[in-house]
Length: 249
Ligand SMILES: CC(C)(COP(=O)(O)OP(=O)(O)OC[C@H]1O[C@@H](n2cnc3c(N)ncnc32)[C@H](O)[C@@H]1OP(=O)(O)O)[C@@H](O)C(=O)NCCC(=O)NCCS
Image (cartoon, rainbow, N blue to C red):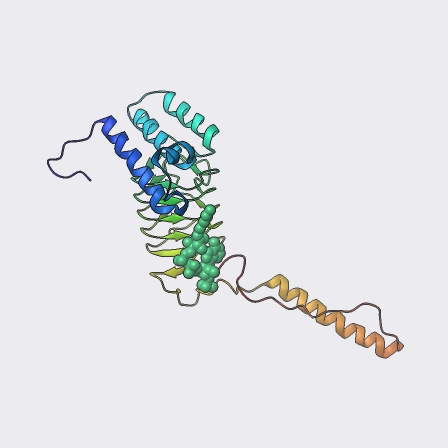
């Protein structure tokens, strides 16, 4: 928000500020960029280039200029692998690290100081019109490959784990991981309650296989008793592996 009495910046001053912010965000959030000169970051960081190009395209899109905003973002996509719709609303100091594969849809809104890694999608879920992309609040971090789908809200300061698929709102200051994304930390603590143990869900397929293995074992022993011959092959006990599941948690 602008301070009372402060004069609005002209387009050139705004762009200069955006360039300074983008470079500062890269240095702050990518350890590899800390020692790099501003020009190196501007010339070699695809995510930074995409965000800056979007600032220009978005201003033109708001001014009602046809074609050009889309053409700018199309060229940016070819050059960087980052696709951002010109109408998407991006907050200050957004940093897209590595860039490639990031997609930000038309009605997405991204707050200030947000960090996105490569392969993040802020996408829609169907063909509906209107608000259909996520709203990402300030200081959110979204890990590489994560898909955030639909008009969901990612609360301030939340973290989305790499490769998560998020289809529900995420509370502020929480960490969600897995598919579907589920909270594993809220305000730094593990969530408690009946639905909190996502890592050890019932597995009906494994239960059925265990049951079958036990039955075959009983039948084999019966055959051995009746015929005196032990059938070839061995039925091994099916043991479910515990520990972190691929769904996270
Ligand atoms: C989610 C993340 C931000 C860590 O957040 P955090 O709040 O510090 O959470 P923690 O590291 O304490 O992990 C919380 C739990 O989630 C699990 N977890 C963390 N990241 C996960 C992921 N991507 N997928 C599945 N589970 C994950 C942890 O094993 C831990 O499990 P536990 O509760 O059984 O101990 C981080 O793991 C992550 O995915 N960062 C993205 C980084 C990235 O994309 N880097 C690309 C660089 S090129």
